[in-house]
Image (cartoon, rainbow, N blue to C red):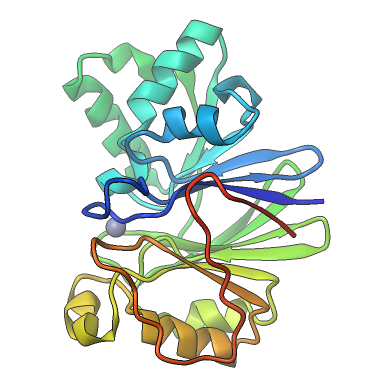
Length: 243
Ligand SMILES: [Zn+2]
């Protein structure tokens, strides 16, 4: 059984009650935390039975603050617990993290990090989770991921405008967790900023034969989904989805 704990669902400027998009994928042997914006440590403790010492890897899709500003606090707790934190990301993530820790006065905490560098197009094994990375269409280098675990497939967009390469790779996946920052009337603006509107996500997900769609990285306004035959799973912060 694979569980996905939703620790946050919003984008950077989003409804403050839903936090920043982050989830913990828990398989039999591996706990993989994906993205870590502000408040992620607090959500990990509130929404899961785990502490940071139980988390095997933190995967950071890109350097934007809503995806990594929670890491200094996570490292504080890791140091308190006497554990190291394996952070997985593009080379730029390590550089950004080093500068972030320096700017908040804890540059030495980089020693708490074991960094695993990934490529924009590649594959890495993290415990029993196979992670395929696909370069996103975003304003900074960013990856979209396909997670293969226990015979299941979970795909996650990070931030990206619609990316056909990604959708071709994730055909038939059990769950797609995709950014949908805005409803369709703001589609053009979303594209400029390397984001997706809900309508685009739905159309591509339908074509890819996705079994369940979960919309995250939501903004301040509620999303309007006009029509789809695709099962859309509505999740709230701290919800757990079994796959
Ligand atoms: Zn971003």
